[in-house]
Amino acid sequence: MLPDSPFGQVISLSHKHLVQDVPRPGDAAAPGAAVLRDVLAGGPFDAAAAGFVLAALPDSAAPVLWVSDRMSRRENGRLYGPALAQFGLKGPILRVEVSHPRDVLWAMEEGAGCAGLAAVVGEIHGAPEVLSFTATKRLALRAETAQLPVWLIRSADHGALSAARERWRLSSLPSQMHPDNPQAPGLPQWEAELFRARGRAPGVWSAGYDRSARTAADRLRLVSRSGDGPLAEDHRAAADAAG
Image 1 (tube, rainbow, N blue to C red):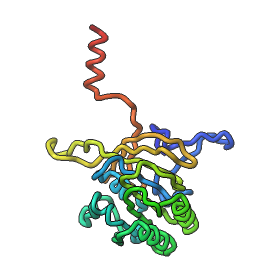
Image 2: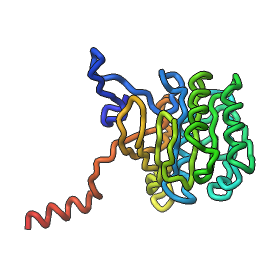
Image 3: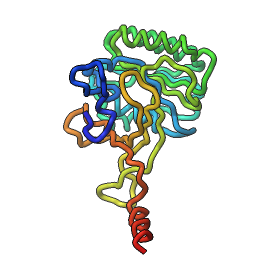
Image 4: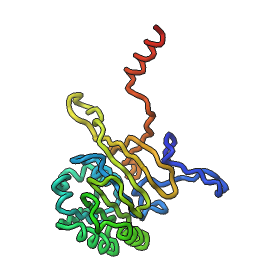
């Protein structure tokens, strides 16, 4: 549970404890983790969506099936194998590259029915006709039946209808400060907006991957956005008010 974030709790008037712990996205050990999740890119050529999904994958030595269509690869590129270890992945990534979104959906459905996978991830560009509400409903049911996390990364899509149990929108933020070189980029940070979900409140968080976390469940760090501006602006506003 995240004590400083509404993401970690849901208020339920029908539950005797009222406040229930809610699992982080992709936490395979938590109830309800094996669902379909949409991740929409906040803008073109933004790798935030892929980074967020990689950080949220289960802590497992089993392989992850990653399927992409041609237009997604043109805009987002391919996964860079040597960098995957930085996200704490223990198992291999089984990359499947196809041309048409229809083939991505077919491969995802087939993968979700295979025993031995840790998760299934698909990348589809735009909002093609084959990516209908019915198609996402089939994926959602397959994920819940097989008890396997399924992620669908949708680039150049502004939020078409979907049966996904959670829908996220990811955008890149300035990286953290490098601990050894202030001039070098540090760990990546993203703005993660949960704009639709079943069983939890929507919200916006600063998300990042914490390699120093003691457990894999804590590697995806979510911090509530306060809505405040930079500290320097706060000081300037206070000085103006005092003057």
